[in-house]
Amino acid sequence: MGRADTGDTERARTRTPAARQPGLTYICPHHRDCSVNAPAGGSFVSWYDDLSSCLQMDIGYVLERAGWDPVQALGAGWRFSAPTGPVESVEYFHPAGDRIEEYFCLHHPVSLRWHSPRDAAAAHHDVVASLARGVLPVVAVNNYHLPFRPAYHDVHAAHLLVVTGYEPEREVYRIVDPMPPAHRGDLPRSVLEEARSSLAVDDASDPFFAGSSPAWRWLEVRTTGPQPTLSLPWLREVVTDNVASMRGTGGAEGPAVLARLLDELPGRIRREGRRALQEMYVLGWPAQAETSLHSTFLTRAGLRFERPDLVEAARWVDLVAHSWTGLRVGSAHGAVADHPAEHRVTALGRRLLVHWEQSLQRLEDVLTHWEDKPKEV
Image 1 (cartoon, rainbow, N blue to C red):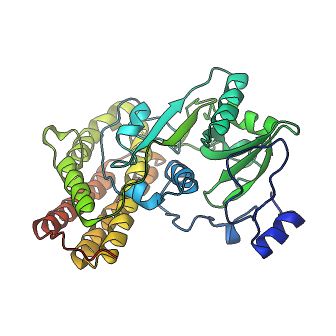
Image 2: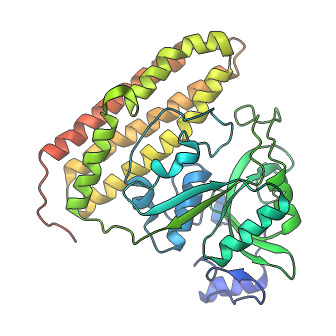
C-alpha cells in the first residue's frame, strides 16, 4: 500500500530524476513527482477534475507525458451522443464504444483504439510491444485485486490504469494510477494479470458497474502529430464546430439525445425496472466529465485572451456539468429504491436541458461578437 522507499524519498527531496533500472522497458524517466502515493490521497496531476473518470484521467496522463496540454486535448471538443451499443457496466464506459476516437480529443491528432487480446500471453505481449514502441498502454483492471485501491478485497469494480514499464528479470510492471488516491509504483506481473483477467464484474458489491467482462482489454493512446497551438482563430473554429454539433439536425447529438432518453425512460422502467436508471447513471459519467473539462478549457482560454464573455459562457457550461451530476445521483438513488420511479430523474433531466440551452445561447452570443484581434499572450 505503498510507502516510498529510501531512494524515492531522497530523489523527491533533491528533485533528481529516478535512475534507469537495468532490463526495464522504459518509455521515459518517472514523472516529476517520484512519490509512490499522492499527498493526502489526492492526485499527482495538477489538472485533476473531480467529475472525470479514470478514462479521461488516464488518457490525459498519457498525453501529458507526451508533452501535451491535457486539458486542451480533452476539453476542446464537446459532444454528447446516444450509445452505439449496449451501455456497458464499467466506470470507464463511453457511448462511442469502439468509435471512441470520433468523439474524444476532438480537433487534435490523437489515435484512440481499444484492443482485446485473447488470453494472458497475448495481453502481456501487447503491453510489452506497446512500451517498446513508446506508447503507454492503458489497461482495464478489477480494483478488487489491486492492493493500492480502496476497493481491495472489498468491492469488484472495473477501472483503468497506465502501464509505464516492465522489468522482465523480476517480472514486475511499473504502473501509474492518477485517480485518487493516486498511486505509482511496481506491481508484480501476477497481480496485474489477475486484476486484468478477473473482470467479470458481476458482484453485487457494486450494483452500478456490474455485469461486464472486459478481460485483457487495453486502450492505445497515440499522438499522430503536434498539438494545435491555442490561438483565437483556432478557438473560434472549435467553438463554432461544437455548437453546430450540439444544434445538429436529426437529433443525433446534443440535448436532443438526452430529451429522447428522458421521454423513453418511463416505458423502459416499466419493461426493465431499475436497469434503466442504472444505465442513466453510467451514461451520465462521461457526459459530466467532458462537459466539466470543456468548461475548464473555455475558462483558461477566456482568461488568456482576456475574453470575459467566454469566461462567463464557460461558467454556464460548468453548470451543465454539475447538472449532469444531479441527474446521475438521482438515477443512482432511484435504482436502489424499492420501487424505481422516474419522476425525480425526469425533473433533474429537464432542468439539465434548460441549463444546456442557456449555455449554448451564451456560446452563440460569444461567436456573434467574436473578433480575432490579437490579445494573444
